Structures are given as C-alpha cells and as structure tokens.
Length: 154
Image (cartoon, rainbow, N blue to C red; front, side, top):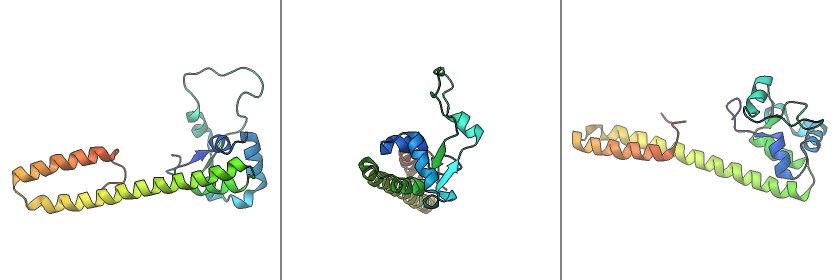
C-alpha cells in the first residue's frame, strides 16, 4: 500500500512478466501514453528508503543496486503494463494479474458487505434481554476477529 492504494513495484511486475526491470522500465518510458499518471506512482526518497532492508548488508560491485527509485503501479497500471510487453509470459501473466485483482476486489467487497450486515444486526439486538445480548456480543466479536483487521468497518 502506497498513498492509500494497492500497488505493485516495477521490479515485481518485471519478474512476473519474465523480463528484467531495466527492460520493463524502458518499455514504460516508450509507452507513456498507455500509462497515464494515475496508473503509476513515482516513489519519494522516503518511500524508497523504507523499502530497503534494515538488516542486510549491500553487495559490493557495480550494477548491484538500483540507480533510480522504483515506480509503483496501481491496479489499472499493472494491467496496462502487460500490454506494453509482447512476450508470451507477459500475456499469460496479464491474465493472471487481472484475475488476482478481481478476486481481491470480490474478497474486500464481501467483507464490507458482511460488516454492514453485522452492524445492522447489532443495532437490532438492542431490544433483547441482557443474557441474550451478551451471547450475541460474544458471537459478534468472534466473527469480527475472523474477518481480520478492522479496516473499512463502521
């Protein structure tokens, strides 16, 4: 997550599409019209440094590390990035990326819908007696813990 958006880094997409990061970024530069500014994010120095390992030591030698900050691609940018590469792997992986993002969106929307329904149910049990309400609250908390972090819930 960067700037509140789910993103993939250029190096991850390059590996996914079976090309080097250098080659991938060349194609991005050559096809800027297919990748408008809202499809990709250029990381700041602070964001770039937070991606580096805090423990590992750097390899010595020329060409071992990135010269430029990475680019982060939004969902639409990751999908469009596949269109700028003509390798068979890029075509296969573009289908995979589309399916992965669709599945992620379905998962997130189903959790949001469940959270909304649980909130309505919680409001409707306010009229129950204390013992029944306590039992409901235990079940409610168990369901919420299964749903994961409390993002997107009211």
